[in-house]
Image 1: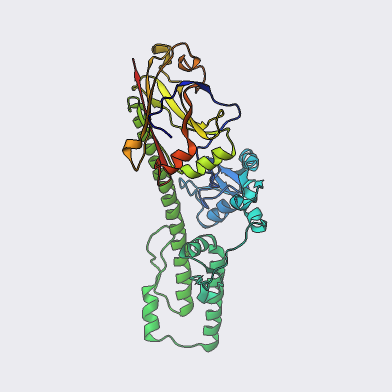
Image 2: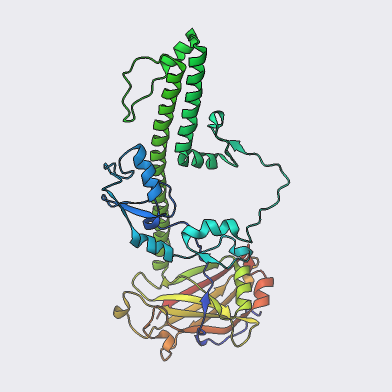
Length: 417
């Protein structure tokens, strides 16, 4: 590639059937309208309350059995008169389709969110990785009273503790019953240390008030008090987890909105001078070489806060597959009716050599008022672009220092005249 070689700019049209290479992140996390506030997962058998909140039927049933009020606004609810099936939301969820998490391994099946877990369990591409280290699992905190579950991490155990309250209650009740029977058989007296421990443990009321009952008098009463305390604390912990999860989601949404706002401000106030950093360049180039209809588009940037809006297109040249084509495209703005058409100005390209600045390739071209590419856009992005159909040789760009840390940098400067 000769940086001093003169190239003629011309109008170019984006081929039909093009697809952009902007990366899209697919997430199996549900939208807020499809998410149960209790289990923070897709709504299963969704119901709606008289206060307007949606839950999984099993989640709200279990919740109301323990508390009797809405987890969101604490309004008293009854399963018989305040809970109704939400068939509309159920149909919407059933119409959703998600890719298998093992799509990268070759699975092309798409299923509904509620069928995803079942598909993952039976997916032929779900093959566990062989580990040379022995697996260390953490036992449940209720192992002493009969729970046999073990977990790979503390987070999995915490989820188990939140979701399996009823089973843990049963284990505690069984332990309490066995102790009571043993006490009745042995009819043993209580020593001083046991009496002291019982005096220290009094179960609080579920509304948070302190108990005014007499001190505990035997081991069975101590177990009962511990059981009630566990129930109250687990319920409070679950309520706090819901509040924390909601706050975290709000903070994440705020951070994303703030980043987008900052990015939009930079694009609007760059005054026509935009630096386009194309990351993950090797993968994007491989995709374009395999399919010449694929091309890269930069974000839209402005010549002034209320001026013209352009974007840059990079793709494999349809005339010469060994070269890159580089064009600018006009884009619609809310101020197009106030601007002068066709656009008249100077457009400069600079493909930055990140190892030797003197080898940076710089080219300048003037707009042509007779071309469709510079007339007022009638679509979101003008199909006609203006630039070079053979801007640079692909192999020269890859080998001669233009790509560093898998990033290609193109600087564009557009000035009105």
